[in-house]
Image 1 (cartoon, rainbow, N blue to C red):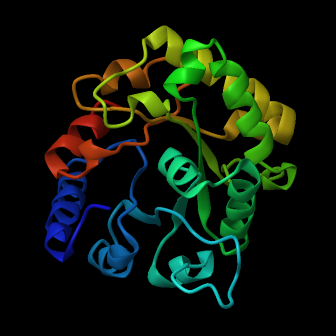
Image 2 (tube, rainbow, N blue to C red):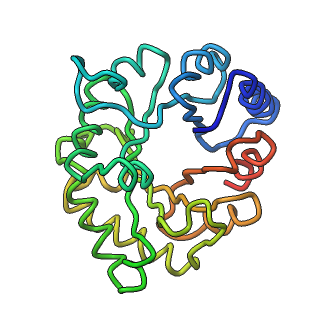
Length: 241
């Protein structure tokens, strides 16, 4: 819940810098729903995609305050985050609800970014691997595989809940362990499509640690939080890719 109209200047600065010096990384911004249409218009023709932060699993109806995936697409979004830890914790979203949202997003032509991750208590109890593998099994549906296409139809994002906004970061060994475990679980659900599905890391990613995290085996990108609010910080992460 960050971002007002005045902050579109940061998005425009990001796109301008990437136009001057292109990056091999795919870049997207997922602003609050109030900014999606304006950001999509401001970034039209740039290399920066625009996405939403969540969507309803329902296509339409009497759900006051909710936004369907089709509405996000109509506003200019190309992606949408589903199952973020803050949605799971603060809004009680279950794996089944996250899966339904992901399927609704794909039906509307959006690419879902499906989030998973363990709490500090689960990590300390030695349950981290089991937790994320259960979340993959519950949040991903077999029909989300993109067949013979070489392009992924969705991506996963591992976000250790205890590292989000705290400044704490797992060790590279811990990140690798979870990403490889997630890949195994994903293959069990979507088969060969798992090999072309990026598994992002999210949790206190910043310019100072991005390079080493992105080089960690199994890490296919980053889901960036606070460091994406300023173009200079986000660019530092993008240039590390």
